[in-house]
Image 1 (tube, rainbow, N blue to C red):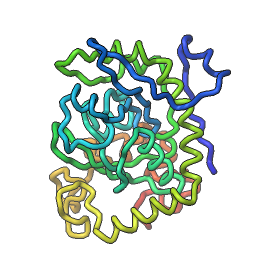
Image 2 (cartoon, rainbow, N blue to C red; image 1 turned 180 degrees about the vertical axis):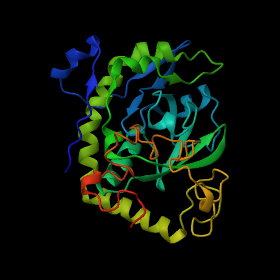
Image 3 (cartoon, rainbow, N blue to C red; image 1 turned 135 degrees about the vertical axis):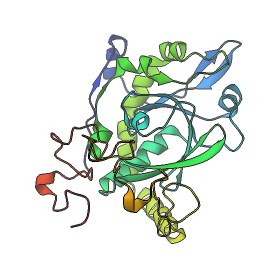
Length: 285
């Protein structure tokens, strides 16, 4: 099993936690009027702060009844979620056909498939109550990319007309965020190494394949869809590999992994170094 070693720069307030046993926190945060919200979770896969959805979260953030999954509270500027258009306020419901119930579910699904050398992920999410879908690549390098834990306080965050304040939320929960982040590593490793979990995801993938993949959620199977990524450009004429709005000829980061093409040793973003990759163009040739 590949051990991921994502490096954090811990805040001084959190360093003392390193010597203590860590378990996933289920404490709650109090808003004005003793309204309680569940503890947040920092996603390794997305570079985002996620919140499990319960009745209070649904009420406070005025989510629709159909909005099931996890709520995105904040995103790291330039991180995976931010670069792929996932916004604070979005509700992520499914990843590669797997229903997301708790925030750590998302990281487990992504990490499992990365270990299978499969880096393409379809995300189903609700935005303002409307179901949408997106498809993007998450490599092991992106999954393991480091960030300064102290910077989480200034990530792009949810704004709402309620009394919720992300700044106050972070101040109250910075220690719990660090605890949950650190403890999630071993939890994710244990989950994805389970034969039962592997069987579950493999079965879901087979079922999804049998139903036909629909990467952009437009109701048309990819096999018949001439615009798989839903960007309005016919696949035959689409020269925007990472769907970032820039033509590949002008884009210095064609695979959208955050590394300049000139310095990128994994040109097609498949997680295999070009020196060892017989298909570093990603075209199977």
